[in-house]
Image (tube, rainbow, N blue to C red; front, top):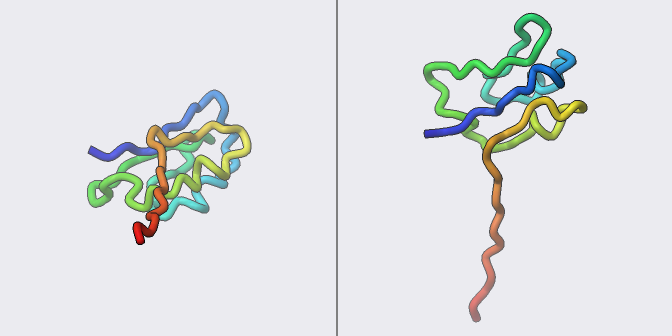
Length: 76
């Protein structure tokens, strides 16, 4: 199962920056707050980009997963 970004409505000021960067298009404003609404065809944040989390000035949106980048080393 895939995780979706979470929104702390108490911190969200409805600026909409997260909507503009969401490649999945699952974030929208509802009653002036960012809201994540998974679509039937969406399997989660398929890009694992965390851009919505990064751009939020109030840290109101967060991803409950960590992106780990591993560097492959040459074994020569």
